[in-house]
Amino acid sequence: MSRTAPTDAIRKPPPAARDEEARLRELGYQPVLARRMGGFGNFAISFSVISILSGCMTLYGFGLGTGGPAVMLWGWAGVGLFVLCVGLALAEVTSAYPTSGALYYMADRLGGRRWGWYTGWLNLLGLLGAIAGIDYGAAMFTGAFLNLQWGFEPTAQSTFLIFLAILLVHALLNLNGVRVVSLLNSISVWWHLAGVALIVGALAIVPDHHQSAKFVFTEFVNDTGWSNPLYVAAIGLLLAQYTFSGYDASAHLSEETSNASVAAAKGIVRSIWASWLAGFALLAGLTFAIQDYAGTQATATGVPPAQILLDALGEGGAKALLLVVIVAQLFCGNAEVAAASRMVFAFSRDNALPGSALWRRVNSRTHTPVPAVWLSVVVAGVLALPSLYSATAYGAVTAINVIGITPAYAIPILLRLRAGDRFVPGPWNLGRWSKPIGWIAVVWVAFVTVLFCLPQSSPVTWEKMNYSVIALAVVLVLASVWWYVARRSYGTPQSYGNAREEAEIAEGIV
Image (cartoon, rainbow, N blue to C red; front, side, top):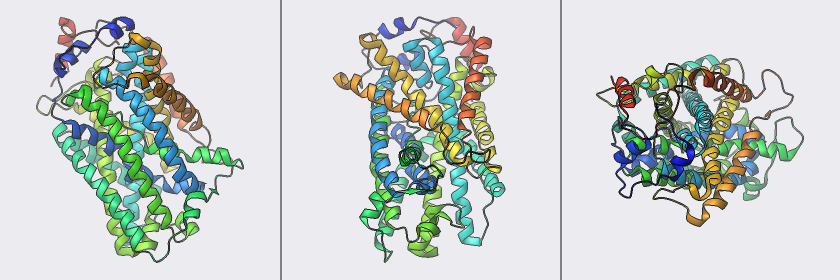
């Protein structure tokens, strides 16, 4: 597979006519995925992956003990602003390089092969960690619903079995082609918005008692065992930072999106600000409606938001709204499997993974990377295995997502800043705001990456440790070892048309 110096790739301007298939060939790839997704569908997949009804709800209990209401509300507002800067900067680079490889392809073009290699492995860790976090969260909420409906007692083992069933459903849905994924994501947008409005409206109108504004915006709670309030508040930012991840899905689906050079960039930015506004309303609605703080934390359902709904609305209302949340989480997990499988496909297309010849194969009827879908859900299942033995494992799973995918966002942005005027922007760009927004994004990512490698509770024991740093170390070691095995075959092509490249891609079609 041919390779080129990164400076050549930077200097080569995109064609004036934005023919996306021609642009993809110019970037080095023969189109093999069906371009059947519109701009709204592209926005919808990132909005679905961010999924405030997944991230906010599943980590709400975590937030109750790591700073409480004040950190959850103000943390959401502040983190959302910084994440919007990251999204804007990433969208600009996405417009220049709209491929399924997304982050790693950008890093490869702007910095060279090794930059692309490590970015890809970090991105892959984050995406697979996100599947585990989202679907395990959906399993927790499903257990809470079963508890209210039939007295089912959620255990680590039963929750894990529900989690595996959800993974299987998402794998099967993703095997049916991108049109099904796009349709489900479009429905997901309206489901999320209507669901948030329904939950917030019911919690505002039905309960006789609400917490004061002072409680919601100033109450600080520390159940972590750490004595430093600043450290506790910083750890509490995980709720917002975990929720605000996965918006690179728009970039990963760009080879299946019409007018991707513009639509994928807009999809990233729109998904962030729409989630920012709706998520703040959801967190405020839940917190105002808390009837018993300690009882909410110690709920028999296993998920504090379910107890808030139960106390505020009664059993019937709680069960109805729990179903709304569970369906939203299922939409979210399905979208994340789509994004992760496209990353597996793209990375394998450039011979970066063990067994790449298998993972890059695409079904000729559905134009779906079937083996990549199965690999994504299987690895996600493995990442969640510690939840069978550790009560704090879910926080670590979500941290895996953050410390994997968030640095992968910043690397292309940093390399774009380093490239300066050599970088030729796509049709969607930030103009003179590119550098200040880019540097804000890079500094923020560096901060949260270090932060979420730190222990989340004290004393630090085997049961309470933050094993996300171990997952990160394993992936970096694996990436380093595999680099010396695959470096001769790995590489992103300069332009499509080479007969060897054509033959290699053709072999991946079944």
